[in-house]
Amino acid sequence: MNSETEVAPAVASILAAARERSADGHDRVSVAARSLPDALDRAEADDRVPVIAEVKPTSPTADGTRDDDPVALAEAMVDGGAAAISVLTEPSHFGGSPEALSSVREAVDVPVLRKDFVLREDQLDVVAADLALLIARFVDDLAELVTAARDRGFQPLVEVHDRAELETAIEAGAEIIGVNNRDLAKLEVDLGTFESVSAHVPDGVTLIAESGISTPADVRRMREAGADALLVGSAIMDHGAEGDVAENTRRLTDAETNDDAETETQT
Image (cartoon, rainbow, N blue to C red; front, side, top):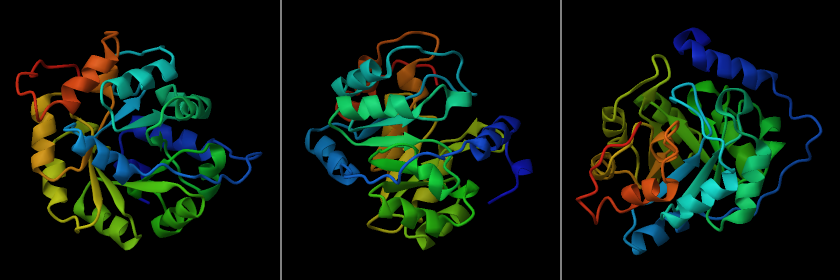
């Protein structure tokens, strides 16, 4: 794991909080996961861009917060064509909770990703989900954590930012890889990050573009670069503006069939 001196102060604070969060008292999770690749295939067959829409009340890079019911938000995202849902469970900086994820997973019939900073095996047992995010940069033994996640039934989504992290993810046996366009050292977004990394992803890997995707043009750009799916949070949540979450999702899921949907949204 890289030093905290190599990340932005907000990220260092998130990591410090993650290390302090205990998973004591939780039984070992066993998940019968809904297949993400199958969900993406269903979206493609329905002429929808496969979007993983994120229930994210706030974040260190958001302009505001949304206090809407997480279940209502998730249902609206599915109504807008989302192939899967991501739910923040990090409480201190993103306003998420394991309880919100459980409620969402009970309410929708698409795969649900647990989005958090999971650093240790015991933290996998906090809540059941279909997928668990593992950030390559912050995990000491990625292969071990990937195996631990699979042993519980999770589909691990391994997040990388550059080619070195991609190699680590591949060596760890990752089959679902997300490329984060956000540089966690500066919190700056560059869609070119995905384009530079995606060319080196081996066949057979489900590839997800993360962060900075806010317009149909962004969607098409990431898809042309090889994205099997897009993970989108802020542009759908529309923090501080109380926008229509279903419509925000639909603008992106329809991006390859509706070239007129070019109105910018807040990133």
